[in-house]
Image (cartoon, rainbow, N blue to C red; front, side):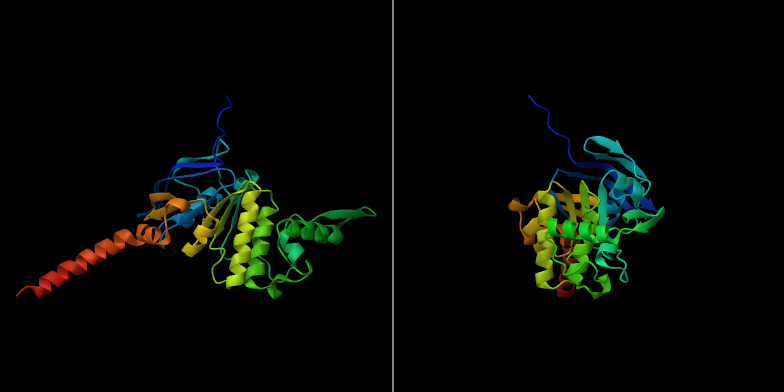
Length: 267
């Protein structure tokens, strides 16, 4: 009988404090190979901090991280990249004045030797960029176009394509469909499906709750730095997810207003 393979990601007891503010408190998260997890919560819930811990941008005060059953410690994004963890930030981190291929290979451009002189191999860079984008189903007319001339959806696709070019096991996406037109949103969601179908585990952080039900397998809800709920997409709906995200605040606010109404109604 074969042993059950380990989770792609397992984060246990992750805590982080900034002065008096407890940003994360004993947070757990797990992710299977090829799974898409929606990580949601109100502003300040801790989801971005948790994702930055996994991507190496933030060092936790306590807790453990395992990738494919092996405990890892990330002191920087370079450490996370070495473990095949990539994150696409909301600001994309693209160079507007550089072309598509240049953004994909930024910092690792292919070179060739000519008479003992090392030169940028532009033909190879553009050929490989075009092939990689086609493999992901990303439609860009010309890899020589500067990123500043692309639409928001195309720019988001390039950022995801660049992350995918590092052969990640885990891809974290922070608000990838924010401020995109409807057609561009669908293109990005298709790209998430393509990446996950290749076995890449995806964490999707989004306020567009409808997107969760189009691409995610599970949803994890955070509130004030803590886990509050986890649901399989097939077992929940938008209304329940909204209640899980804001339920405590809404209940507390309703209770206060109710008490005030009762007080004001007394003769």
